[in-house]
Amino acid sequence: MFPSSDDADPVNADVGSEGQFAPWLYVRNADSPVEEEKRFPNDESVTFRAQVDAWLGHIFPGASANAASISGTSYSRLEFRLGRSSAWSRPANIGYGLSYAFPLVVALLSAHKGQIVVIDSPEAHLHPRAQSRMGEMLAQFANAGVQVLVETHSDHILSDARLAVQKKALKAEDLALHFFSGAQEGHGNGIVSPTTHSDGRLSDWPEFFFDQAEIDLMALASH
Image (cartoon, rainbow, N blue to C red; front, side, top):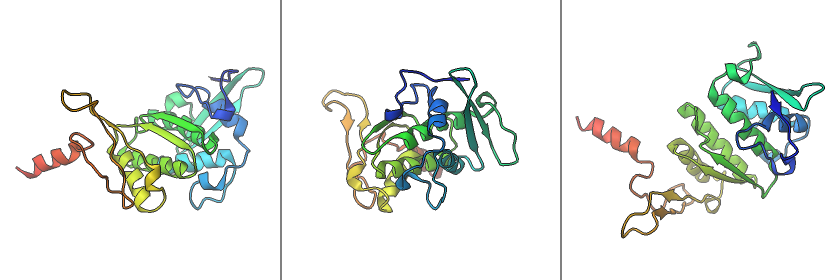
C-alpha cells in the first residue's frame, strides 16, 4: 500500500523523496490528457495511464503499471506486469528497476512546462539499454519544457542527451553539464562545465569524466 498525503503537491508533481506518492498521483491523473510534446513518439494514446505504460514499455519492453485507490482508506495499490499475458504483481515481486522508474515517469508526465523535476541516479538498477532509453525520455521531457535536473554516473544517460542534441531533439543550449571532480590544490573548486555543440560534441572532456570504459578497452586492446 502507498499513502496519499496532504503534504504532497500534485501541482508540482511531488512524488515524494522515495517515490511513495507516485501511485496516488497516478490515480489522480489517470484519465487526464497528456500534452502532445510529452507523449511517447508515434503513440496515439493521450491519457496519463496510457502514457505511463508507453514510456515504461519503452524502457522495459512489455511492462505496464496500474494503481487504484483502496476503498475506505487514504492508500493506493500499485501493480506491475511484464507482458499483456502476465499476471499483475506487487512491486516487491518485480525487479527494482521497474519500481524505481515508475515514480520518475509519473513525475515527468505530471510536471508542467517550467517546473523542475530533480532525479537522483535515474540509471539505478537498469540494464545499459534501459539506461539509454531512460536518457531518451529525459531529453524529450526537457525539450518539452520541463526543467530536468539529473545527478548521474551513467555514460549512457550522458550519451543519449548528446545524441538528442545531435538529432535536433534538444537544443544544445538547453543541455547544461557540470562535472564535480573534487577540489584539488591549484585546480579551483573542482567543477568543470563543458558546453555542448550542436553536433553533440563537448567543448571539454576533463580527466575521469565518463572515460573509464575507454580506459579499460584500451587496456584490453594493448594485450
